[in-house]
Image (cartoon, rainbow over all chains, first blue to last red; front, side, top):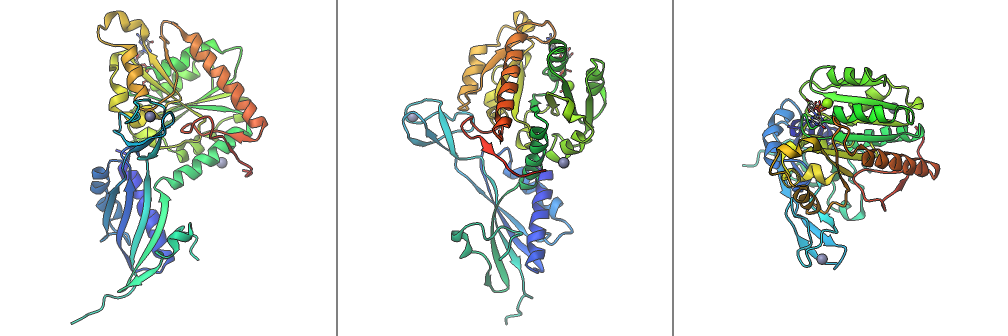
Length: 121
Length: 267
Ligand SMILES: Nc1nc2c(ncn2[C@@H]2O[C@H](COP(=O)(O)OP(=O)(O)OP(=O)(O)O)[C@@H](O)[C@H]2O)c(=O)[nH]1
Ligand SMILES: [Mg+2]
Ligand SMILES: [Zn+2]
Ligand SMILES: [Zn+2]
């Protein structure tokens, strides 16, 4: 279960961003995770409240966008969707392919709360 | 400008950065979640290259024979190369002691609850080593087919072990790990006669389906069967590493041979 340690370093990173923007707290954190990143999105969601407790990100929501798994064939040039344990070309079936998308683990965006919430009536 | 969060990374992002709406600010980041580990790994790799070392990360499930392979390798290379070993386990000094008995420097990292080594742990360990006196440094990772795959340690090559008793379907079940292999060693080949369902062809097919071009070698460390192919691979990798260092280049294990990077930073 390495998701907890990844979550902890994510929260550190997010707190640094919040501090450098003088934010009061963090509203949301957006990640993009691919099926070959080695990170399990559900484990990440479970770990997030523990990792963020007591930090500026404590009340924030973690939003995980799943990246598609796409390979490009070095033989026929086709770009096709693939499965984590079957990355062969969807057109010609060759295994000489390169990953176009699918191993990302990226912090995309952070939404910060910078002002007092207004008491609109 | 905000350099801490990287929101100035591309022109395209800048329109999204710092948009203030109703007291909230959206900041585009686009940073790898393991950026800190990867920076440390890059630093480690610079240490290794400075000392003309080839560093190999050994990964497998618990008990596939990583330490047994190291013992056999140390014996075989006794008069050829100077070897060092960093051992990673949750608990015990057992593996480091097995290596030290062979007369080779070994440093044990006990991770406690962490199921993998990371670049910071390896950095602490490597400063305990006489790196300048070594040719080959092996890092035996924690026995685990999941977590270690995500953490770059600064190694040049990943060697993954699959013992015949684990079954030939493991590359299909643990694609993230097996995709990271620069070499797959199928170990404990002496046990094949008593197993009726392990097929080397199927193991290879499962690896190729991960779009891996890694060579596969079958061997037994305990019975000294077919070790030569592994030893030859190591010698050839060491020669290539020294050639890269001569040209001021280094290599990442995850990338194909065409993605050689030059680095000019000093440590
Ligand atoms: N028959 C046979 N047994 C082996 C071979 N290699 C290792 N073993 C046995 O497998 C068991 C585990 O071997 P280790 O070398 O400790 O495995 P490991 O991968 O280092 O284990 P961890 O560090 O605990 O993950 C031991 O009992 C070894 O004697 C082999 O080639 N043939
Ligand atoms: Mg061991
Ligand atoms: Zn094709
Ligand atoms: Zn250092």
